[in-house]
Length: 376
Image 1 (tube, rainbow, N blue to C red):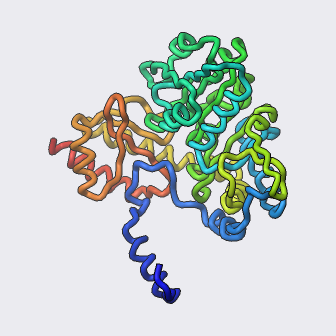
Image 2: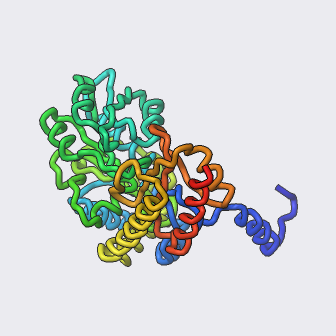
Image 3: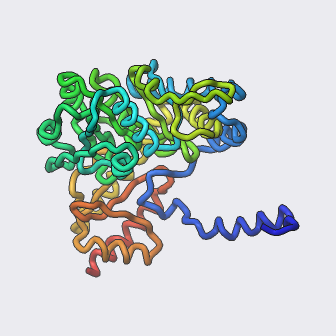
């Protein structure tokens, strides 16, 4: 830091140089985040300096958090849920498993997740000292319930189902996991970080949320298909006693208890989540998902024309393609300015069709992909 500060104009010009180095979303088919809705940006700015870590000072922001959680819960089958706005899926998953661990009785706790679970569960294994057991997938890349059941023992404190897997966009058989959880009286967490704002608006109905009796908690990220500013996640509990397992005494604040993993929390993202959900409504999200699924269908139809097949028919706006030499195709597409990603096993090209992708850009991408695939 310099002794004498620089002018606002100079600093902003420097920032513009750095911002220009960031990737524009319009050529990104790898990310599950997108441009925030303008109303989310305005709401974030209005509440930017509020701190939900000391909620007694910012009662308006605190009330907005309760409203946002109720809207998330209503969308997912239970408007009476407890929870809070997190920094995203990783924090939500950590806190859900922490609550499950703390509410159980085990000196050697374990949880059972699918092999396709998000890498946040590897962090959970390290942070919470919980044994994370990974169950195999079926031929459709969903977790196999029989493999889950085989992993359960007396020290299993939670099962985890994924509703919208990061790699394949698949939905685990949550109903079967719910039945298992009810029968064995085990906590069931559903990671719907991506799927929460997609699955309710698909043409085909899926059982995945609090309408199932065994679902104890859910992760739902407004900053993905919810079109909120970053970082905005949601952690929801059916039973408020599970939220109580996360309490920490905070005697020197205006509140005497915190439940969040982070201490200081900006009310900006909470206000943004509230604003965009109020503004969009279910109809708005339904239209957004319809657009993304239309584009997804177009992508699948087009790649089949030049001999490329998806590993599975897309369930949501995630497409996984068998392009042969995946690494080479991805490299050549990157040279053409396209950002794609890969799956771990099997290795394949992974594409996420988000609202920022225009029809024109999609056709340009497909033209380049066809050219690259024909060259190999």
